[in-house]
Length: 133
Ligand SMILES: [Zn+2]
Ligand SMILES: [Zn+2]
Image (tube, rainbow, N blue to C red; front, top):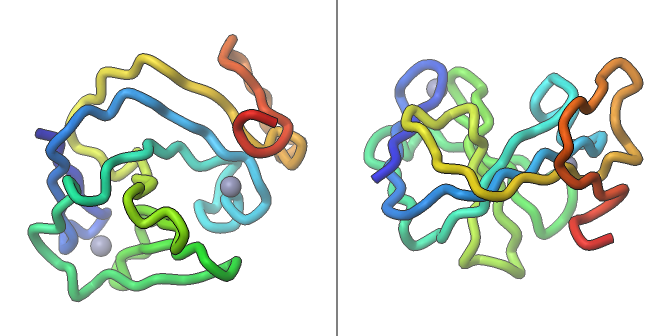
């Protein structure tokens, strides 16, 4: 069982499952959304993610139609994103996780849009656009 929370602690969640894949996205929207060079996310099974506190603080923003970016309306922590056409998957923002994931797979996405001031210094695969491209 994994646990996570936002910066102010009002929002708390539990995830009943493995968190074993990390994707880092360098697209310009994720840079704005996080205020830094990339977002680190893990795809999780939406049905197994439960918000146990502070659900009333969750607010969503749509930078693109069909994709909600959900954050704590009190402290601004980005918590997850979800696509309308992929409701079974929630893309959890890993910085909100309070437990340690056992990661087996990592990659970088949208590297073509990466900020010039950030260098990737690991061996994980770099996709210029979406994973697989
Ligand atoms: Zn908060
Ligand atoms: Zn992105």
